[in-house]
View 1 (cartoon, rainbow, N blue to C red):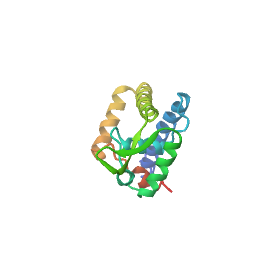
View 2: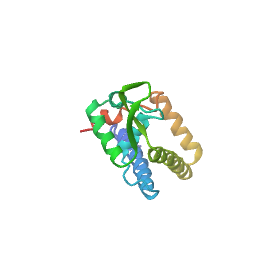
View 3: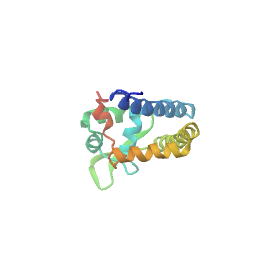
View 4: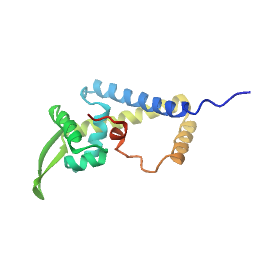
Length: 157
């Protein structure tokens, strides 16, 4: 007679799956010319988006203070993934935008995620992977782009 695994194993396995994928994405990004991108940076660049944002809005999107968001923007600016500029509609506002390098890292990471998913489908079988994804959709919120994970995890100084 088999027993169910302890309840704490499920979140740990889900986290390990997440961690395995994220580590693989960043190792491949480094091989493709983006060695400075860290997992936190992906959340930040997604939160900045294609139209840019202010540090205050970025902090709200990430669930952290404006100052914490600003420190990460400083890092991303130093390594060439974002730039600061004036808002064309309000010169008093400073807007953070992705650079071409920042966009390139996101485009590459999307392709890498697709490659990893394809490999998981080979290992698990496409039907089982689709079933896993469908089951996770059933038990998780519909909004897959919650970007406040770094703040929730306490990932900012």
